[in-house]
Length: 139
Image (cartoon, rainbow, N blue to C red; front, top):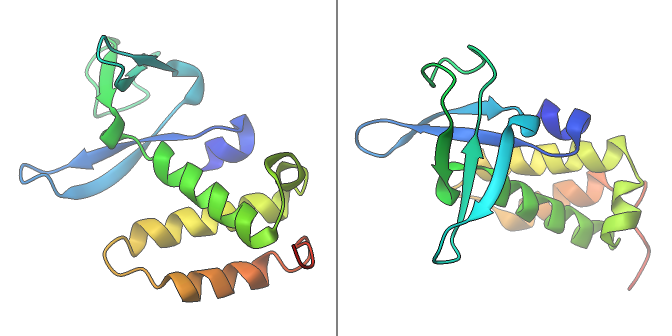
């Protein structure tokens, strides 16, 4: 998730075993990723590695990744949840810098690690504590 802090964007390839179970996440460089739509309007991602930057990819060919193989959706959900808890719009939230980014990274990690048994009330209470310094009073 360091790419989110440095580039303002983050992509990770989801590595699956033969049974389709997630066995790992591999970070992908945002400047090597393009996002497009196919003829049916479905989003797909094309990753073009520059060298041996990803041992899961052979050579320097382009690799098309399906939407479900990218963590981006989880990241957007985490950002929205943090903005909702902080009661800030996107521009205000982004201006909060490190506090906002820390909360988003925590949320992504929590949601990924607890994808089968997330306690959303506990997550929200933790986010209220993390975002206490920037949280707007009332609605």
